[in-house]
Image 1 (cartoon, helix red, strand yellow):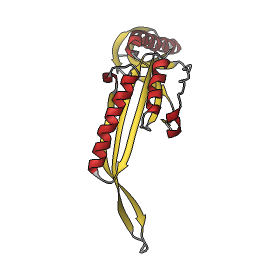
Image 2: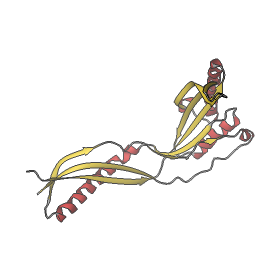
Image 3: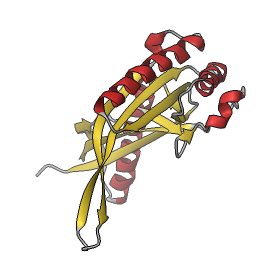
Amino acid sequence: MEHVIKVVGYSRLSVEPDGIRIRIKLNHITKEYSEAMEYAEKAQREMAEVIKRANLAESELKTLSWGITAEYSYHTNERNEQVKTFDGYYYKHSFMVELGMDHKTAGRILNEIVQSSLTPEIGLEYMVVNPDRYKDELLERAVADSKHQAEVIARAADTRLGQVVWIQYTDRVGEHVRGTENPLAVPAVLCTRQIKMPEFTPAKMDLSASVTVEWELM
């Protein structure tokens, strides 16, 4: 009978964020589909101008999602019946701009937005641009943690740890971001002012990995 023990090893690294992502959400509702399309085209052009005035290439403005949907509301009439009412065509467009740790450029983008006719929701996230560069260290630590746990269990069971029999690893280092809890709506009153982007000090971010290792018991 083969004697083995299967132990999951964990590792975690706290690293400094090295990038900023700005999320910009535009929305508008109209009664006519053609009006929604016209607004969408105008908003796209104006956002491209915002990015260029902030001294970035237009290609830095990336679309996350886009759509025009028919919106309805429901209410109860005098006969206590549910009535469906057409509210209009709802346009929504989500953009993002990714920067290095560059608050000045983020501030320029924000100022150009508030000087425009657009009133989007804006969210700022800090991120680890390339979490994969920490992968080797995370995996080494995870395997070492598995071995340590297995050795403790083996000693407690009055046996010795042998060779590795089997390893399973699922790549889940992935993307790590920390941002605003809720997007910030830009009020129209700001459109007459210049605003200064605060230089936040972001907290470190945790990257983690896990490895399942099956060890021989001798």
